[in-house]
Image 1 (cartoon, rainbow, N blue to C red):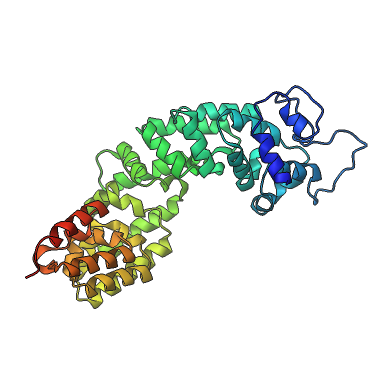
Image 2 (tube, rainbow, N blue to C red):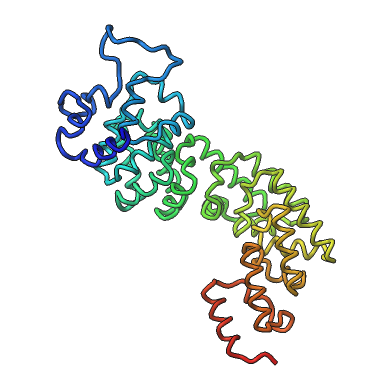
Length: 386
């Protein structure tokens, strides 16, 4: 019941004085520096019992419960926040409410990322303005914030965020690119500027080593295709390049073309995972009569195959082979491996039903959208099976 009361109370935050009346607080003017004690938790005097550092702030826990926050989740995520003597839960809730976040969303955000209630309104306003350099509307920001509270609240260094936006823009990344980075790999913007510059300089060096003519354009090409690259280490990327070079006996020009294209997407894999996935793919293909040139051709045309774990890859290949597909056809059209085993299996059943001949017509039909596939089956249904 307390949680329900809290939800109803937050739904009326925009009404003056409502917050105080709902929780029996002394009416005061709400400002970043003067907030009601119970929902901006802090010691009020020497007579108030002081709690040891190891115990939770009881008033804070009560407030969060009243706001509908899942305290058990908050305790698991960031237990130290519940022991803080001063927090800013009411101001944060009011700020998000004014930006258009619904009550339940506010409670969910705080439940999943409790550290949000330690931020000041001034900090939040500054951060919001920086995000508006990337997003067109408040609604977009609220949506991203709900999906990933950490992306907005993780760091308190607004100056660093501003510097990173400026730096990444200087690389030629546009607003759309920054939008994708912030929604997919937000840690990029909480990295120190020095760390991001180090990765960019490293990518420029790699391009020069491989004989690239425009090293300054290479980082943009890689980052645009691999949004996680800036939150990985240069050591990992270097190791992955060496593994691919040795495993596929690639020339400098082949490596350069690979990384400027879809191959950039596998640079952030853990080196152990990359090595293991390559070995399992190699073993499976060799067992079915493939040569090293076939393995190289498949990986260069569909590098994301190296993201597929051993068991999943084996199951997919077995499914295709049992369905009448040859390994040679898979090498020519490896993107078929991008689909789930369930999807592949279902399509093979439908194609067998209509008498589809893979040897005569190829396997392009397997690498198509569901809408196009269904249309194809509908047309084939109208043709009598001879």
